[in-house]
Image (cartoon, rainbow over the protein chains, first blue to last red):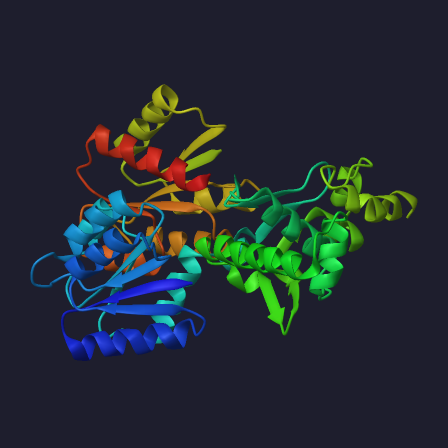
Length: 262
Length: 120
């Protein structure tokens, strides 16, 4: 989770930062002294946080103005006000996600985060992978875009291997039967791996990919995958399998055959 | 999608009924002038997606909101009040909206529309 903390008073900002860090140890927190700084950072980098915790009374852009700007710039970003004053009615008018009265406590931060990102919807934060039929990857119900067809194929292969770590040689032999010289193929694979990493990074899911020495693997628990669910005995996934598995890749025949006979 | 409105102000209930009938396609719109009746209705197993709750007079509305959130965390709650000082508390129980009475029909419509968006 990526979070902005905004407060013009350094002491308050530090308290806010600590409260967020305690409430969500996994969060990546970026501090700003002014709402305007956060907005220009957002505009310059295109970096959209999941949540923003902001003071209201600040020089320059107030929290209320920030709310309006955020709605336009990053409509999916949730805003929580952290203030010593009663602006709650204004906050409701602006459809702000949450409201914490100072002094801020980690407990209240956690409550607001649980409300905005319900624990049961964490499945939505997993990469959805469809193996039955043709191989597709979805993020937020949108197909994930791959710059190169082969990057997607590499991910498909890693999904097929279910977290088992793969050597470069193995991948090259499977994906490119017509492999050119080994050193050239390895370079090509390295490029694809960094492309895959970059693609996953754009959606904040680079942790899906694990690199150990020269080997690579994916972390299965971060995926919501029909193939995995079928193996776990999920009946809806079992019924979804109609004899088609990663149809666009010839190397997937082996798993397909195995699934058909089991 | 089901909507309930609980308020001791009968005219508010009629307006909500009218708006829902004219502008929105809901499976069911139920209105109650007593918190007790609403609770009974829910205890019979009816699900509630959107709850518009009046909190004036006594604080039962706020307690009802809290209970609904506890049992059905995904229910979208909009509070109705003539006082603005409960708005901070409203955030604490994660109400999604707070309308200050008197409420125009536009504001009511807008709030219901917003609540429906949140339900998706």
